[in-house]
Length: 450
Image (cartoon, rainbow, N blue to C red; front, side, top):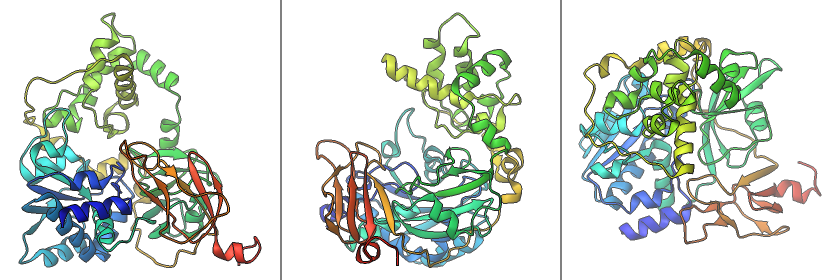
Protein backbone atom coordinates (compact mmCIF):
# COMPACT_ATOMS: atom_id res chain seq x y z
CA UNK A 1 0.00 0.00 0.00
CA UNK A 2 2.86 2.41 0.77
CA UNK A 3 4.33 2.12 -2.73
CA UNK A 4 0.88 2.59 -4.22
CA UNK A 5 0.31 5.70 -2.11
CA UNK A 6 3.68 7.18 -3.08
CA UNK A 7 2.79 6.59 -6.72
CA UNK A 8 -0.59 8.29 -6.28
CA UNK A 9 1.04 11.32 -4.62
CA UNK A 10 3.57 11.54 -7.45
CA UNK A 11 0.92 11.18 -10.15
CA UNK A 12 -1.20 13.90 -8.51
CA UNK A 13 1.65 16.42 -8.59
CA UNK A 14 1.59 17.15 -4.85
CA UNK A 15 4.31 19.54 -3.68
CA UNK A 16 4.90 21.51 -0.50
CA UNK A 17 2.07 24.05 -0.52
CA UNK A 18 3.57 26.11 2.27
CA UNK A 19 6.08 27.77 -0.03
CA UNK A 20 8.97 25.33 -0.46
CA UNK A 21 7.38 23.36 -3.30
CA UNK A 22 9.39 20.20 -2.59
CA UNK A 23 7.76 17.18 -4.32
CA UNK A 24 5.86 15.35 -1.59
CA UNK A 25 6.27 11.87 -3.06
CA UNK A 26 9.99 12.09 -2.24
CA UNK A 27 9.20 12.74 1.44
CA UNK A 28 6.64 9.93 1.39
CA UNK A 29 9.37 7.44 0.42
CA UNK A 30 11.38 8.09 3.60
CA UNK A 31 11.17 6.10 6.82
CA UNK A 32 10.75 8.26 9.93
CA UNK A 33 9.42 8.29 13.46
CA UNK A 34 7.44 11.53 13.32
CA UNK A 35 5.20 13.29 10.82
CA UNK A 36 4.80 16.91 11.90
CA UNK A 37 1.93 19.02 10.58
CA UNK A 38 3.00 22.63 10.11
CA UNK A 39 -0.02 24.78 10.86
CA UNK A 40 1.94 27.60 12.48
CA UNK A 41 1.37 30.07 9.64
CA UNK A 42 3.57 32.74 11.15
CA UNK A 43 3.78 35.21 8.23
CA UNK A 44 1.77 38.31 9.26
CA UNK A 45 -1.63 38.95 7.61
CA UNK A 46 -1.80 35.56 5.83
CA UNK A 47 -4.48 33.36 7.44
CA UNK A 48 -5.25 30.70 4.84
CA UNK A 49 -3.92 27.75 6.84
CA UNK A 50 -5.99 28.50 9.91
CA UNK A 51 -9.06 28.72 7.66
CA UNK A 52 -8.20 25.32 6.19
CA UNK A 53 -7.68 23.86 9.65
CA UNK A 54 -11.04 25.21 10.72
CA UNK A 55 -12.98 23.94 7.70
CA UNK A 56 -11.06 20.88 6.45
CA UNK A 57 -9.68 19.19 9.57
CA UNK A 58 -10.94 15.75 8.51
CA UNK A 59 -9.07 15.87 5.18
CA UNK A 60 -5.88 17.21 6.81
CA UNK A 61 -5.89 14.44 9.39
CA UNK A 62 -6.54 11.90 6.64
CA UNK A 63 -3.46 13.23 4.85
CA UNK A 64 -1.51 12.90 8.10
CA UNK A 65 -2.68 9.30 8.47
CA UNK A 66 -1.60 8.52 4.91
CA UNK A 67 1.83 10.13 5.29
CA UNK A 68 2.39 8.22 8.52
CA UNK A 69 1.37 5.05 6.75
CA UNK A 70 3.75 5.73 3.85
CA UNK A 71 6.72 6.65 6.07
CA UNK A 72 6.15 4.15 8.86
CA UNK A 73 5.90 6.98 11.39
CA UNK A 74 4.50 6.12 14.80
CA UNK A 75 3.78 9.66 15.96
CA UNK A 76 1.84 12.46 14.32
CA UNK A 77 1.93 15.95 15.82
CA UNK A 78 -0.15 18.90 14.63
CA UNK A 79 1.43 22.30 15.35
CA UNK A 80 -1.10 25.14 15.69
CA UNK A 81 -0.72 28.53 17.32
CA UNK A 82 -2.57 28.67 20.62
CA UNK A 83 -4.18 31.98 19.63
CA UNK A 84 -6.15 30.17 16.89
CA UNK A 85 -8.41 28.74 19.57
CA UNK A 86 -11.18 27.54 17.29
CA UNK A 87 -8.80 25.52 15.11
CA UNK A 88 -7.03 24.19 18.20
CA UNK A 89 -10.30 22.94 19.67
CA UNK A 90 -11.43 21.40 16.39
CA UNK A 91 -8.20 19.42 16.15
CA UNK A 92 -8.17 18.47 19.81
CA UNK A 93 -11.64 17.03 19.41
CA UNK A 94 -10.64 15.29 16.17
CA UNK A 95 -7.49 13.64 17.59
CA UNK A 96 -9.12 12.43 20.80
CA UNK A 97 -8.62 8.67 21.20
CA UNK A 98 -6.15 8.60 18.28
CA UNK A 99 -2.36 8.32 18.03
CA UNK A 100 -2.12 12.00 17.01
CA UNK A 101 -1.55 14.98 19.28
CA UNK A 102 -1.86 18.75 19.06
CA UNK A 103 1.11 20.98 19.87
CA UNK A 104 0.04 24.50 20.84
CA UNK A 105 2.60 27.03 19.63
CA UNK A 106 3.29 30.53 20.85
CA UNK A 107 2.42 33.55 18.74
CA UNK A 108 5.92 34.36 17.56
CA UNK A 109 7.83 34.51 14.29
CA UNK A 110 9.02 32.20 12.77
CA UNK A 111 7.25 29.40 14.66
CA UNK A 112 6.77 27.55 11.37
CA UNK A 113 10.47 27.26 10.53
CA UNK A 114 11.22 23.53 10.14
CA UNK A 115 14.18 23.66 12.52
CA UNK A 116 12.07 25.45 15.13
CA UNK A 117 9.05 23.16 14.77
CA UNK A 118 11.12 19.98 14.95
CA UNK A 119 12.80 21.18 18.14
CA UNK A 120 9.54 22.24 19.77
CA UNK A 121 7.72 19.03 18.83
CA UNK A 122 10.45 16.46 19.46
CA UNK A 123 13.23 18.17 21.43
CA UNK A 124 15.64 17.23 18.63
CA UNK A 125 18.00 19.58 16.82
CA UNK A 126 18.56 19.03 13.11
CA UNK A 127 22.28 18.75 12.28
CA UNK A 128 23.78 21.94 10.81
CA UNK A 129 22.82 22.08 7.14
CA UNK A 130 20.58 19.05 7.56
CA UNK A 131 16.91 18.35 7.02
CA UNK A 132 14.15 17.02 9.33
CA UNK A 133 14.69 13.52 7.92
CA UNK A 134 18.10 13.49 9.65
CA UNK A 135 16.35 13.34 13.02
CA UNK A 136 13.53 11.03 12.02
CA UNK A 137 10.96 13.65 11.01
CA UNK A 138 8.90 14.65 8.00
CA UNK A 139 7.32 18.11 8.11
CA UNK A 140 4.31 18.90 5.92
CA UNK A 141 2.11 21.97 5.57
CA UNK A 142 -1.61 21.53 6.27
CA UNK A 143 -2.62 22.19 2.66
CA UNK A 144 -0.01 19.70 1.46
CA UNK A 145 -1.61 17.01 3.62
CA UNK A 146 -5.05 17.93 2.33
CA UNK A 147 -3.66 17.40 -1.19
CA UNK A 148 -2.20 14.05 -0.11
CA UNK A 149 -5.69 13.02 1.01
CA UNK A 150 -7.09 14.06 -2.37
CA UNK A 151 -4.27 12.27 -4.22
CA UNK A 152 -5.21 9.01 -2.49
CA UNK A 153 -8.60 9.45 -4.17
CA UNK A 154 -6.88 10.04 -7.53
CA UNK A 155 -7.57 13.79 -7.53
CA UNK A 156 -4.55 15.81 -8.73
CA UNK A 157 -3.54 19.28 -7.58
CA UNK A 158 -5.42 21.76 -9.77
CA UNK A 159 -6.47 24.45 -7.28
CA UNK A 160 -4.75 26.55 -4.61
CA UNK A 161 -6.13 27.93 -1.37
CA UNK A 162 -5.12 31.58 -0.96
CA UNK A 163 -5.71 34.63 1.24
CA UNK A 164 -6.04 38.18 -0.02
CA UNK A 165 -5.42 40.81 2.65
CA UNK A 166 -4.20 44.33 3.26
CA UNK A 167 -5.52 47.24 1.26
CA UNK A 168 -8.63 45.47 -0.10
CA UNK A 169 -12.33 45.95 0.54
CA UNK A 170 -13.09 42.34 1.45
CA UNK A 171 -10.15 40.39 2.93
CA UNK A 172 -10.91 36.70 2.48
CA UNK A 173 -9.57 33.20 1.78
CA UNK A 174 -10.76 31.00 -1.10
CA UNK A 175 -9.92 28.29 -3.64
CA UNK A 176 -8.74 29.30 -7.12
CA UNK A 177 -7.57 27.34 -10.16
CA UNK A 178 -3.78 27.32 -10.48
CA UNK A 179 -2.78 29.77 -13.20
CA UNK A 180 -5.42 32.36 -12.27
CA UNK A 181 -4.19 35.95 -12.52
CA UNK A 182 -3.67 38.17 -9.49
CA UNK A 183 -6.09 40.60 -11.12
CA UNK A 184 -8.93 38.11 -10.68
CA UNK A 185 -7.98 37.46 -7.05
CA UNK A 186 -8.10 41.17 -6.28
CA UNK A 187 -11.46 41.54 -8.02
CA UNK A 188 -12.94 38.73 -5.92
CA UNK A 189 -11.68 40.50 -2.79
CA UNK A 190 -13.56 43.65 -3.76
CA UNK A 191 -10.55 45.35 -5.31
CA UNK A 192 -7.90 47.58 -3.78
CA UNK A 193 -9.13 50.58 -1.82
CA UNK A 194 -6.73 52.91 -3.60
CA UNK A 195 -5.32 52.96 -7.12
CA UNK A 196 -1.62 53.21 -6.27
CA UNK A 197 -0.64 49.88 -4.70
CA UNK A 198 1.78 46.96 -4.81
CA UNK A 199 1.33 43.30 -3.97
CA UNK A 200 3.47 41.18 -1.66
CA UNK A 201 3.23 37.57 -2.76
CA UNK A 202 2.83 34.86 -0.10
CA UNK A 203 4.15 36.90 2.80
CA UNK A 204 5.49 40.14 4.22
CA UNK A 205 8.90 38.87 5.30
CA UNK A 206 9.77 36.05 2.93
CA UNK A 207 7.51 36.84 -0.01
CA UNK A 208 8.21 38.61 -3.27
CA UNK A 209 6.83 41.94 -4.43
CA UNK A 210 5.15 42.88 -7.71
CA UNK A 211 2.81 45.31 -9.41
CA UNK A 212 2.04 42.94 -12.28
CA UNK A 213 -1.64 41.99 -12.09
CA UNK A 214 -1.11 39.43 -14.85
CA UNK A 215 1.20 37.30 -12.71
CA UNK A 216 -0.45 34.02 -11.78
CA UNK A 217 -1.13 31.70 -8.86
CA UNK A 218 1.14 28.67 -8.45
CA UNK A 219 1.08 25.59 -6.22
CA UNK A 220 3.13 27.44 -3.60
CA UNK A 221 1.33 30.81 -3.60
CA UNK A 222 -0.15 31.63 -0.19
CA UNK A 223 -1.94 34.71 -1.46
CA UNK A 224 -1.61 38.46 -1.87
CA UNK A 225 -1.01 41.25 0.60
CA UNK A 226 -1.89 44.61 -0.93
CA UNK A 227 -0.09 47.68 0.42
CA UNK A 228 0.09 51.35 -0.62
CA UNK A 229 2.98 51.97 -2.98
CA UNK A 230 4.43 54.53 -0.56
CA UNK A 231 4.41 52.12 2.41
CA UNK A 232 7.58 51.74 4.47
CA UNK A 233 7.90 48.07 3.48
CA UNK A 234 7.70 48.84 -0.21
CA UNK A 235 10.60 51.27 -0.04
CA UNK A 236 12.59 48.64 1.87
CA UNK A 237 11.86 45.81 -0.53
CA UNK A 238 12.47 47.73 -3.75
CA UNK A 239 16.03 48.88 -3.05
CA UNK A 240 18.57 47.60 -5.54
CA UNK A 241 21.37 45.30 -4.33
CA UNK A 242 23.85 48.08 -5.09
CA UNK A 243 21.93 50.49 -2.86
CA UNK A 244 21.65 47.93 -0.06
CA UNK A 245 25.36 47.19 -0.20
CA UNK A 246 26.38 50.83 -0.30
CA UNK A 247 24.20 51.68 2.71
CA UNK A 248 25.43 48.64 4.63
CA UNK A 249 29.07 49.37 3.90
CA UNK A 250 28.75 52.95 5.14
CA UNK A 251 26.38 52.55 8.10
CA UNK A 252 26.78 49.14 9.77
CA UNK A 253 28.39 49.68 13.19
CA UNK A 254 28.62 45.96 14.07
CA UNK A 255 26.12 46.22 16.94
CA UNK A 256 25.30 42.46 16.55
CA UNK A 257 21.52 43.03 16.96
CA UNK A 258 20.85 41.09 13.75
CA UNK A 259 22.72 38.07 15.09
CA UNK A 260 21.31 38.23 18.61
CA UNK A 261 17.71 38.03 17.32
CA UNK A 262 18.40 35.40 14.59
CA UNK A 263 16.20 32.30 15.23
CA UNK A 264 18.79 29.92 13.82
CA UNK A 265 21.59 31.48 15.89
CA UNK A 266 19.44 31.10 19.01
CA UNK A 267 18.93 27.42 18.18
CA UNK A 268 22.70 26.99 18.18
CA UNK A 269 23.63 27.27 14.51
CA UNK A 270 26.59 29.39 13.42
CA UNK A 271 24.61 32.10 11.65
CA UNK A 272 26.08 35.54 12.29
CA UNK A 273 24.66 38.19 9.95
CA UNK A 274 26.72 40.98 11.53
CA UNK A 275 29.88 39.19 10.42
CA UNK A 276 28.48 38.66 6.94
CA UNK A 277 27.98 42.42 6.74
CA UNK A 278 31.76 42.75 7.00
CA UNK A 279 32.01 41.15 3.57
CA UNK A 280 30.61 44.40 2.14
CA UNK A 281 33.98 45.99 2.70
CA UNK A 282 34.61 46.75 6.36
CA UNK A 283 37.74 44.63 6.58
CA UNK A 284 40.54 43.42 4.33
CA UNK A 285 40.33 39.82 5.49
CA UNK A 286 38.17 38.81 2.56
CA UNK A 287 34.55 38.01 1.81
CA UNK A 288 35.52 34.35 1.47
CA UNK A 289 35.95 34.21 5.24
CA UNK A 290 32.97 36.33 6.37
CA UNK A 291 30.50 34.78 3.90
CA UNK A 292 30.58 31.42 5.68
CA UNK A 293 28.51 32.80 8.55
CA UNK A 294 25.51 32.93 6.19
CA UNK A 295 25.59 29.22 5.38
CA UNK A 296 22.73 28.20 7.71
CA UNK A 297 20.62 31.35 7.28
CA UNK A 298 16.93 30.50 6.63
CA UNK A 299 16.14 33.93 5.10
CA UNK A 300 13.33 34.58 7.60
CA UNK A 301 13.98 38.33 7.30
CA UNK A 302 13.94 39.24 10.99
CA UNK A 303 17.45 40.67 10.88
CA UNK A 304 16.55 43.10 8.07
CA UNK A 305 12.96 43.99 8.90
CA UNK A 306 12.94 43.81 12.69
CA UNK A 307 16.33 43.67 14.42
CA UNK A 308 18.55 46.19 12.67
CA UNK A 309 18.36 49.64 14.34
CA UNK A 310 19.85 51.24 11.22
CA UNK A 311 17.32 49.75 8.75
CA UNK A 312 20.11 47.92 6.92
CA UNK A 313 19.89 44.69 4.93
CA UNK A 314 21.73 41.80 6.63
CA UNK A 315 19.34 39.16 5.24
CA UNK A 316 20.09 40.30 1.71
CA UNK A 317 23.82 40.29 2.49
CA UNK A 318 23.45 36.69 3.67
CA UNK A 319 21.68 35.72 0.47
CA UNK A 320 24.44 37.31 -1.59
CA UNK A 321 27.01 35.48 0.52
CA UNK A 322 25.37 32.10 -0.03
CA UNK A 323 25.16 32.74 -3.77
CA UNK A 324 28.82 33.78 -3.86
CA UNK A 325 29.86 30.64 -2.03
CA UNK A 326 27.96 28.45 -4.48
CA UNK A 327 29.47 30.27 -7.45
CA UNK A 328 33.02 29.94 -6.13
CA UNK A 329 32.61 26.39 -4.88
CA UNK A 330 33.24 27.33 -1.25
CA UNK A 331 31.48 25.54 1.61
CA UNK A 332 31.36 25.61 5.39
CA UNK A 333 30.47 22.90 7.86
CA UNK A 334 29.80 23.74 11.50
CA UNK A 335 31.83 21.28 13.55
CA UNK A 336 30.22 21.78 16.95
CA UNK A 337 26.80 20.27 17.60
CA UNK A 338 24.11 22.97 17.94
CA UNK A 339 23.31 24.04 21.50
CA UNK A 340 20.28 26.17 22.29
CA UNK A 341 21.14 29.68 23.46
CA UNK A 342 20.22 30.36 27.10
CA UNK A 343 18.29 33.49 26.04
CA UNK A 344 16.37 31.87 23.20
CA UNK A 345 12.92 31.96 24.79
CA UNK A 346 13.40 35.58 25.83
CA UNK A 347 14.34 36.80 22.36
CA UNK A 348 11.39 35.42 20.43
CA UNK A 349 9.66 38.04 18.33
CA UNK A 350 5.92 38.33 19.18
CA UNK A 351 3.70 38.76 16.15
CA UNK A 352 2.16 41.92 17.59
CA UNK A 353 5.59 43.49 17.98
CA UNK A 354 6.43 42.52 14.42
CA UNK A 355 3.21 44.04 13.12
CA UNK A 356 4.00 47.33 14.86
CA UNK A 357 7.59 47.35 13.66
CA UNK A 358 6.48 46.76 10.06
CA UNK A 359 3.68 49.34 10.33
CA UNK A 360 0.97 46.92 9.24
CA UNK A 361 -1.07 46.48 12.45
CA UNK A 362 -4.15 48.09 10.90
CA UNK A 363 -4.25 45.42 8.19
CA UNK A 364 -4.29 42.54 10.67
CA UNK A 365 -7.89 41.35 10.24
CA UNK A 366 -9.55 37.96 9.65
CA UNK A 367 -9.62 36.57 6.12
CA UNK A 368 -12.65 34.25 6.35
CA UNK A 369 -13.13 31.33 3.98
CA UNK A 370 -15.68 32.01 1.24
CA UNK A 371 -16.82 30.00 -1.75
CA UNK A 372 -17.95 31.13 -5.15
CA UNK A 373 -14.77 32.23 -6.93
CA UNK A 374 -15.90 32.61 -10.57
CA UNK A 375 -14.39 30.29 -13.15
CA UNK A 376 -11.62 32.15 -15.01
CA UNK A 377 -11.94 32.44 -18.77
CA UNK A 378 -8.22 31.75 -19.15
CA UNK A 379 -5.32 30.43 -17.08
CA UNK A 380 -1.56 30.51 -17.58
CA UNK A 381 -0.09 27.48 -15.85
CA UNK A 382 3.61 27.74 -15.09
CA UNK A 383 5.71 24.63 -15.66
CA UNK A 384 8.18 25.62 -12.93
CA UNK A 385 6.25 25.92 -9.67
CA UNK A 386 8.09 23.42 -7.52
CA UNK A 387 11.59 22.51 -6.36
CA UNK A 388 13.65 20.86 -9.07
CA UNK A 389 13.42 21.24 -12.81
CA UNK A 390 10.46 22.57 -14.77
CA UNK A 391 7.95 20.09 -16.12
CA UNK A 392 8.00 19.33 -19.84
CA UNK A 393 4.72 20.15 -21.64
CA UNK A 394 2.86 17.11 -22.97
CA UNK A 395 0.11 19.00 -24.82
CA UNK A 396 0.05 21.00 -28.05
CA UNK A 397 -1.70 24.14 -29.25
CA UNK A 398 -5.32 23.53 -30.25
CA UNK A 399 -5.77 20.39 -28.18
CA UNK A 400 -8.77 20.05 -25.91
CA UNK A 401 -8.20 19.27 -22.24
CA UNK A 402 -10.42 18.48 -19.32
CA UNK A 403 -9.80 19.57 -15.76
CA UNK A 404 -7.25 17.21 -14.13
CA UNK A 405 -5.69 16.18 -17.47
CA UNK A 406 -1.90 15.97 -17.43
CA UNK A 407 -0.26 18.93 -19.21
CA UNK A 408 3.32 18.78 -17.86
CA UNK A 409 5.57 15.90 -16.88
CA UNK A 410 9.03 15.70 -15.21
CA UNK A 411 11.76 14.37 -17.48
CA UNK A 412 12.17 11.37 -15.21
CA UNK A 413 15.86 11.83 -14.52
CA UNK A 414 15.64 14.77 -12.14
CA UNK A 415 13.58 16.18 -9.27
CA UNK A 416 10.24 17.57 -10.45
CA UNK A 417 6.46 17.37 -10.30
CA UNK A 418 3.54 16.80 -12.62
CA UNK A 419 1.30 19.68 -13.72
CA UNK A 420 -2.43 19.23 -14.47
CA UNK A 421 -5.08 21.30 -16.22
CA UNK A 422 -6.95 23.43 -13.66
CA UNK A 423 -9.86 24.08 -16.04
CA UNK A 424 -11.44 22.39 -19.04
CA UNK A 425 -10.87 24.07 -22.38
CA UNK A 426 -8.47 24.43 -25.28
CA UNK A 427 -4.70 24.92 -25.33
CA UNK A 428 -3.94 28.40 -26.65
CA UNK A 429 -0.18 28.51 -26.18
CA UNK A 430 2.64 26.22 -25.14
CA UNK A 431 6.14 27.44 -24.23
CA UNK A 432 9.04 26.11 -22.21
CA UNK A 433 7.77 28.05 -19.20
CA UNK A 434 3.96 27.85 -19.29
CA UNK A 435 0.81 26.42 -20.87
CA UNK A 436 -2.08 28.78 -21.56
CA UNK A 437 -5.63 27.39 -21.57
CA UNK A 438 -8.88 29.10 -22.52
CA UNK A 439 -12.06 27.88 -20.87
CA UNK A 440 -14.70 25.81 -22.69
CA UNK A 441 -17.25 28.60 -22.26
CA UNK A 442 -15.00 30.93 -24.27
CA UNK A 443 -14.29 28.30 -26.93
CA UNK A 444 -17.99 27.54 -27.41
CA UNK A 445 -18.90 31.22 -27.76
CA UNK A 446 -16.34 31.81 -30.47
CA UNK A 447 -13.94 33.71 -28.26
CA UNK A 448 -16.29 35.84 -26.13
CA UNK A 449 -16.80 35.07 -22.48
CA UNK A 450 -20.29 33.88 -21.59
